[in-house]
Image 1 (spheres, rainbow, N blue to C red):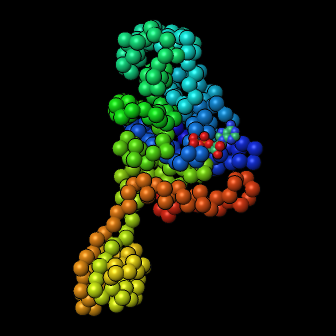
Image 2: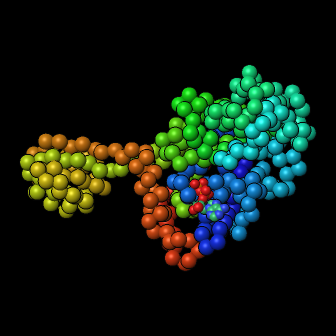
Image 3: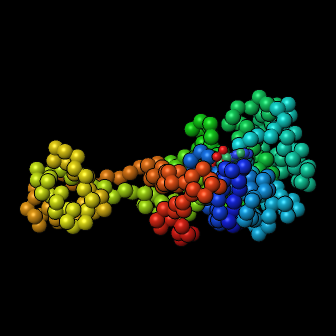
Length: 319
Ligand code: ADP
C-alpha cells in the first residue's frame, strides 16, 4: 500500500508537485499517468525518499522510506536514471545489491531467471540493449521479493515484444497480491495495462478512478446529424437544450444530447433525417482533454497565478 498525503515539491519557483494525495492499493496494476513534465518522476522520487517534500508526506506500508530497515524487501523500484556500473556483469550487479540487504545468492539466480537474463548474466551490463537493461532493472527491483513495486516509465523505448513482456510481468506481480504502481505518459498503454488510474497534470491530481470508468467517462457525447432540414432541426434541438454547431451542407454536430433524443425531436417536428451518428473520442483524446485543462489554466507555479483545475466527477471515485 502506497499513500501520498498533500505532497508538495518545489524546485526554485517551479512547483513540480502540488498538494497531491492518493492511495495505491495491492492486487492490481495502478497506472500513474500524466503528460511529460506533469510531476510523475518527482512524485516517485518522493515516495522512495530520494527527494524531500516541501509539504505533506508519503508512506509505503505505513512507513516513510527512511524508516524501512530493509527497504528492498518492502519496495522495489525502477527509475529512469539507471545506476548500473557498465563494466560489471548483471550477476555481480545484483549480487552487490543483494549483499547490501542481506539477501542470499539463490535469490539472485531466481530473479535473473524471472526476467529471462540467466544466459547473459555473466556479460557486461554496459553492453546490454535498452530492453535488457530494463529487465536487469526489474530484476533488481524484485530482488527483495517486495510487496510494493514502483516503476517509472518501464516501457519507454522498448520494442513491442519488450512492452508486452513487461506488461505481462506487471499483471502477474499484481495478481500475486503486490502493489504495482507504474508511470507512463501514454494513455493507450495504461488503458491496456492498468486496472486503476491516477492521473496528474502540472503536479495536481486530475483523476483517480478505475480505468474502465475513465474510458466510459471519456466518451464524448457528440452526435453528427445530417438533414435536408438542418436549420429548422438545429433550432428545435437548441430549444430542447442541445448545443449545436452548424457544419454546413446540412450537417450538424450536436453536444449534450443522445442520438435517440435527436431522433425524437426530428420526428416530432416532421424533420427528415439522413444520418444520426454518435461520435466517440479516442482514449488519447479524452486524456489530453483532461490534462490540458490543468495545463491551460495553471500558471508557472508558486506565483499565485494558479487555479484549481479538477475535472468534474474525477476525484475520489470508487476504488
Ligand atoms: P514527469 O515525470 O511527469 O515527466 P517530472 O517529475 O520529471 O515530470 O518533472 C516535473 C516538473 O518539475 C518539470 O517541469 C521538471 O522540469 C521539474 N523538475 C523535475 N526535477 C527537477 C529538478 N531536479 N530541478 C528543477 N526542476 C525539476
